[in-house]
Length: 306
Ligand code: AMP
Image (cartoon, rainbow, N blue to C red):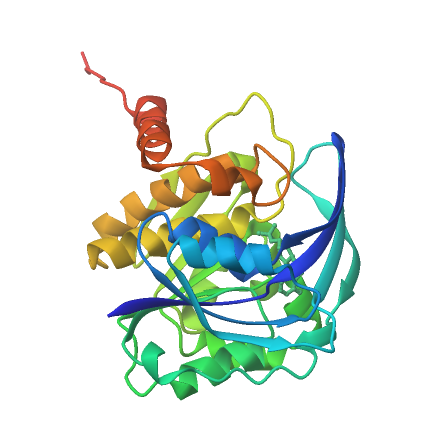
């Protein structure tokens, strides 16, 4: 039984108020895989060009990420994205999105991935997300989907079809508002959940994340950090930690999802400390355990009513 992650593996050029990074490796599936692999092994589905560094692939393999489902188009260029963050670091402008190998990507799910129990549909063309769902012979126990405004602008109809097939959607607050047409996040959550997913997570950057299910809503804070260098990939890292924890414990109860949200938030707090996925590469289990304790300290308190 396994965790399958799909998404982009990319080159990113980033500008933050603290500096610039030119053509570093990134992509939704890269961040999600680094994060989830700290909890369990990962089977990756993506597409890259001949320009993607072999050492990056080797590092992923060494960390328990299976790359059999990653297509390499030797004569083509990898997906490229460029972004510039505003001073608040919570908002950013996309400066360029070059699909390159992604433009005609037809994922092929290897036979060895058919034991997929947990499926993470990372941010990617909705039609490709759908193709992966359709290729799995048995429906996974849990399908989690991430997406972004780019696909709402360019492929909304396809996106809505995928929504009907998934258990949980992850979006940030502005994407939730765009998808639902509602400003109130409570109304937005109800509307989005009526489109398909039983569960909805709305990420609010440095203000934490909300999990909606039936009439319940759970809030997990983000850790206040002294320094945030680069928020790129924080959402994908959150998603990887979230589903990585669920896949490791094989428990998809609402209570365990609350723990998974904290695991995702802890992983995202590491991601933003350095450019790209550098910090995720460095951390070990002790670092993660200690960060989880920080979250416990942050939000637990005693209260006595007189
Ligand atoms: P996040 O900061 O979590 O939203 O993710 C940023 C990552 O998403 C970057 O590494 C980009 O390469 C990747 N990315 C940006 N735009 C897209 C897109 N339209 N589809 C898939 N991945 C994207």
